[in-house]
Amino acid sequence: MNASSASYSRITGTGSYLPPHRVDNNELAARLAADGIQTSDEWIIERTGIRARHFVEPGVQTSEIAVRAAQHALEAAGRKPEEIDLVLLATSTPDMVFPSTACIVQRKLGIHGGAAFDVQAVCTGFVYALAVADSMIRTGLATRALVIGAEVFSRILDFKDRTTCVLFGDGAGAVVLEASDRPGILASELHADGRHVDILCVPGQVAAGAVTGDPFVRMDGQAVFKLAVGVLDSVSRSVLVKAGREAQGIDWMIPHQANIRIMHSAARRLGVPLERLVVTVHEHGNTSAASIPLALDEGVRSGRVGPGQSVLLQGVGGGFTWGAVLLDF
Ligand code: UT7
Image 1: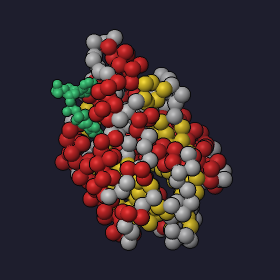
Image 2: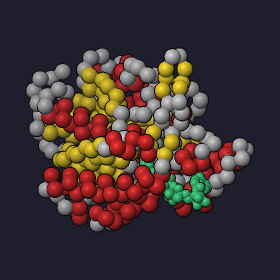
Image 3: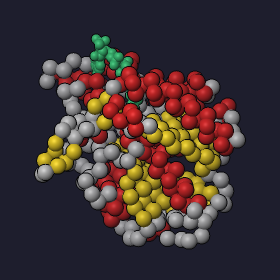
């Protein structure tokens, strides 16, 4: 790794990958109905804004979709894998208990050397990973990072629990973050409050050669909803103050994509017009740590998010964790 420290880090390329199998609400409802579980396209759209999500084929691992997203980000940045000296992967669905999925991705990309590790902050994972990568670059621990959010959440969904299984999807997003003399990441803030561990968790564990406990996503949706709206607002105001910027000056706001109602509420509270939200939840569902980089890449590739624009990323999720990053693209 490079010993010199840079003043700033900035994003030089974005990429993403969605598994080809798109499952719309009607297809999912029919699948659940076969097991006697009732849901509907209308309920899911009205309560969440979700119309479809993507699921991997059985056996596809998080590292595989992470690699695809990373390759697209490297291509966009004009970088080769060997130029990367840090791989940070945010995921709650690692390939194995250990080693980290970041190390598996590193191997699959042909990167040797530098650091690689997973970041576990559930749906806030990408914001955590981006803030950590920025700090490492600014302190000289790394010069060029691949920061990835990737999830195969379908693996941990209980398809007999309609309160959770209709919400989530699989996918991956990535950015290349490089040392720079020009400001890119302007301010970050990360938070956690472990008193709320139980409201969103997968309580099971591998022990004595078997999975013990409950290996599926469990969520108190209303408790998460209420906490999310409040913390997204406070953390966003905080990074804006740190960066000396106003909410009115934000070009794009990219919150964690869990529920369109939470996203609209966060934008309204901050005074950001809804047209400045990048929304992918309707097509992706909640892809946990992948949702923000997926939405960022969608914003870039659709021509909306571009050079010189300011972008506010907002994460919230299990832990309870939350955080925000304000950056100039
Ligand atoms: O990624 C981490 C962050 N996660 C989140 O941000 C999720 C936050 N929470 C939410 O997005 C919402 O709370 C949910 C979408 C999970 C639920 O929406 P809600 O408006 O809070 O609904 P609810 O839990 O109050 O349930 C309303 C009704 C209930 O029936 P009763 O008790 O009123 O008869 C549920 O049983 O809707 C029922 N219900 C469903 N009906 C059809 C719950 N899930 C379903 C379903 N289909 N899939």
